[in-house]
Image (tube, rainbow, N blue to C red):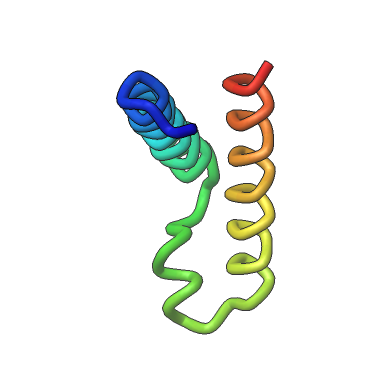
Amino acid sequence: MLTTAVLLATLVYTGIGLVIFVAGFWLWDKATPVDLWGEVCRGNQAVAILAGAVAIGLALIISSAIHG
């Protein structure tokens, strides 16, 4: 059964996860020597696939850390 406490905890953990994800992706973007978004806009599919893989990897790590 979905209670108010469970819903509130879910929303809090979702917010924490999103903040950590955005911060991690931003740090990864700043650590790379190229303009990530500019390369993706120019049609560099390899960079787009790499960015997607990094995003999935970060999401898996964060979800595992939150879930326990």
